[in-house]
Length: 272
Image (tube, rainbow, N blue to C red):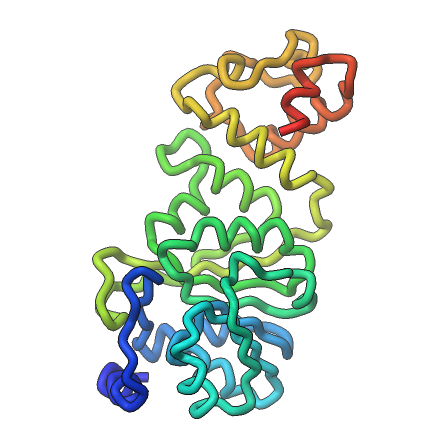
């Protein structure tokens, strides 16, 4: 959808983007087509369709069934007018029961103000889905894909790389949107790892958050474990969190779990 056409639709329904919702509408047709080309399967869950810029490309495949989740009710009449075959669900995507959409492929031009918590929620439940394609701020995408010993590597990198295979699809400039954001964007394609890692998401998230709490400090300052636990993990407690791969974090959590109640400090980490 080109910008003049988008503005006509918005004017017809007396609509404007809402800044507090982080609404920037993607209008660049090659980018919209590239996102649509990433979709696999027949059932698609689109988060935050707004006026339907991406929806227009998703429905081009007649075999697809599209469900949209939108927090902003003002777009409902516009979506129904343009795409009567699309199922509309009005709710905050952060309140989704992800299990209700098992077997779907997820697509979204993520609202900038909720991109990180939404992706983490998706990551926790990614084994239920075929995959996802997300547009986000480029700096967030760089954090997702960051490697160890870099400034962008942190909790988001560890959590998403533990559970997902992630591909960088493309960069997207501000000129692709209306209104233009002040930052560059990027599109990432994500697929759940097979086999799915048997790693408790919330426990790993708690452990990683602790490790990065003061990222310049050594691990043993952030995570209080006995010398025996560190030795059993094979990880030097004098290292910093940014040097550990996601596989090493998984191994550390496994060691902590195996220690069980024998070590009160270990139990404290597990309970978070």
